[in-house]
Image (tube, rainbow, N blue to C red; front, side):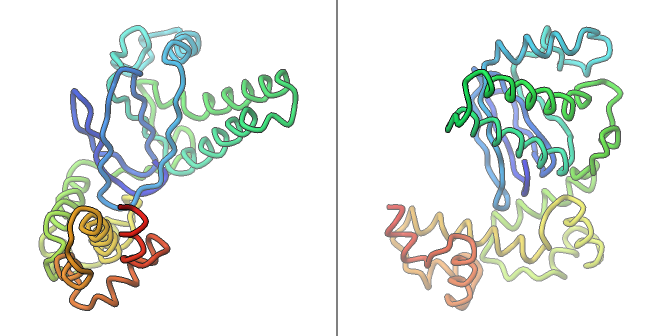
Length: 256
């Protein structure tokens, strides 16, 4: 997860995910990712057999591994690694470079294989400590993005409220009052969770809802704007174009 927040729903549980986290799932696991705000993610698919064999070799002492995270007892359910945005960004770059080695193959297969092994070794170096029982994000110089307990609950409660009722005339004061915080405290809370400001996040949520109405209803742009919390459809259109690089009408034609 490079940016944003949301839920991952699997057959066994639902978990909240934040920017700066990585999630491992077994091959037989199905999932649904539901964003609260626009997400930036990188999805990597690999053989679970290969992954388990590598983890078994790299984690020889099961006593030092987080409960349920060792390949001998991992059941394939969602395994969350709290890495920090810096490491997530670096590993994303490496994964893309590895993918390009095999997409274009400007070098021999042998060179591509050697560079792939080198890339995987670097990814392992960055991420493997997060599987250890005594791991803290600071161990890798990672900046922790996920918020602790009560703070996470407050932010997620606000995100759900905004998503459930985007038509409400929310103000920063309203949101702060709902979270029992001052406006400045609320802004710091969102910033600490890797999110944009509360009001910008609200408009991102409204924009996502706007797109859903365009795809799944016959309502006009003006009525959709009002249902999403914008009295002026021109303001809605500006936010929409900033998110999707096209007008609402163009989006409806292109995606239906």
